[in-house]
Length: 114
Image (tube, rainbow, N blue to C red; front, side):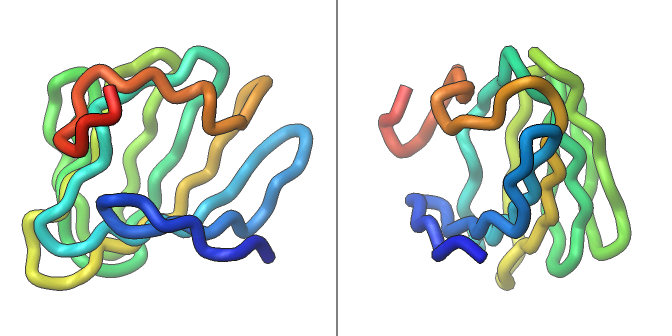
């Protein structure tokens, strides 16, 4: 299993990285959010394990709580937000043709990474 990858919003850990998929455990800390972003070469499926938050996909809010999931089609704009007082934990399953971090096109980012 890969080490923890720290980000301004929390951290992620790669659980599986194969030619046909990648699986990450994503932890978004209270009050934080990921960039509004999109991917050209992959789609994602987010399954909520712990906490509460919101997935915004193409401008539409999807409330998240344990046991809920949301699909993010390839090239859709999306963001993950945690407005709660506890960590939001998501299992992300990526499918497509390429899973590198350089397939992230940031559209908005409160941490100045656009």
